Length: 102
Image 1: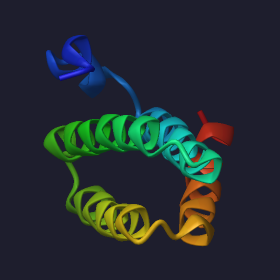
Image 2: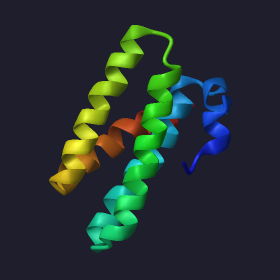
Image 3: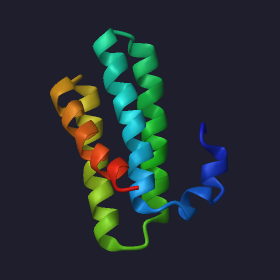
Image 4: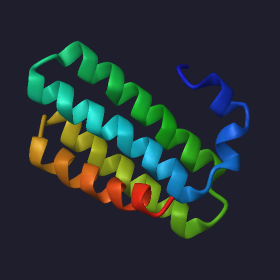
């Protein structure tokens, strides 16, 4: 686990927008490493992103947020496994909206 302090409850103190902005940082890193052809670093960023997504799901207290994050996870995993840079770029832009609203 890369984000141990977050898993211990600090993540729950962040707003949903802050959580998704942090998820977006890892989406961006995943995309950028894939573009550079560094599959090992892309996999590490992918794993960190999934960890943050699962933390967001764990602390989701509204069903709409839960469903949204679960659906995001599906799109992210599919895009990563297919190395679909365009979809990762779309997901990165989606998360950027949360970063703007932090």
